[in-house]
Image 1 (cartoon, helix red, strand yellow):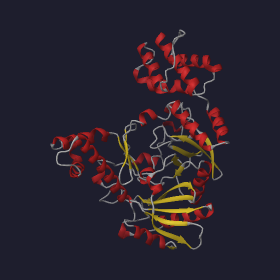
Image 2: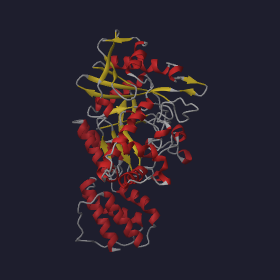
Image 3: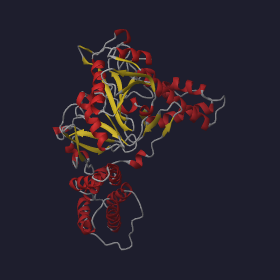
Image 4: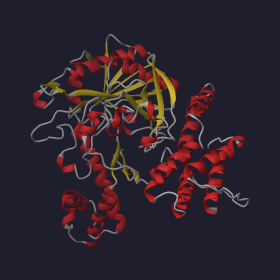
Length: 490
């Protein structure tokens, strides 16, 4: 039991340094942890010191010791680690109070503290996330391979909103998940927001795709939707947190997020590639001379609305949204609605800059066809070996999250290129990728040259996927659409 006692003591020391556990509560916390793991005795360990290990490392040390003592099984480790970590943390109210205290002076200081806390308690799996391969390509796209989460291929789950068994909580992002043992959410903490006069809350994503990736969630379990009020809620958010961007997924299957049954936005502290895309064609609207509008120089179809007057930015954004969801062009395959429902939607994102609010609006459509059963404006079948999942808000802005299986599979393809051999049967679906990568290599590539060529190929595939998602294939076509809404060239 000395091994368990030592592990518990290190966790208590960690919590005092990193989770704001008050020294007055240390003995109580120790006894709570001992009770959780079923340890009936404890031996004080005067020589035990906390050596800077992470919460995840210390929790694993404790549960390994408990398995060795026969207190828990190997399969139960995750559940016990979640319960122990939750017992060492500040309560939701205490977290909210500390966040509010800091936010009164600096919203950036508040989010920095809240993010650090979410990492420290191991709710945000930063150790795992830091192991994800990532690079920025010459075409400006950011490509990552997500080893921390399984590949998500079932759009039906998005339609159902990832509802939970028993109906409590109603879905995977409801605020009632905070501390819920049934989903191992004892370490989840959230802070309240007011957006558009409504109660929302903010939390960080445990498997974030970018720096300080978080989600703003409606306190009411209400379906995802984008309307004129959405633009004002997004601007409310950046008014409070001007160091973050915030955006909303299209509220439709195939082109939206993985949870469509609950209204939420995504944002954080990173600048995504689309946010810095230049304007290819400048436009204006005579009713709103204080707003700049433009077709973005981007692989997908996107327009940007910029201005310091919130009402004007929201009004112009609504003209575009309303015009797009009603627009149809069968020659281009754009069908806004049919007997199967609505097919056109937008994904808006806003940042607050010197020029005012920059609202970037991506035009999306999820129509399917016999040739493209997964979506006409989705990654086409030849690219599914790289990416079959929905192209949501983050990827539509140029940060691609590719499935973890690719790390091993692409390395094997590279080895074939270096060794000058053909692909084995189990990698036959990579034949196009292999041939295109071979063309990027010298005749007898080294391992590093093959890897560099593969990175270029991945970036090219991601660029072509974005082009697949483009509802208008040229900037001039987008300009033509905008002029039909009353916009004109500057």
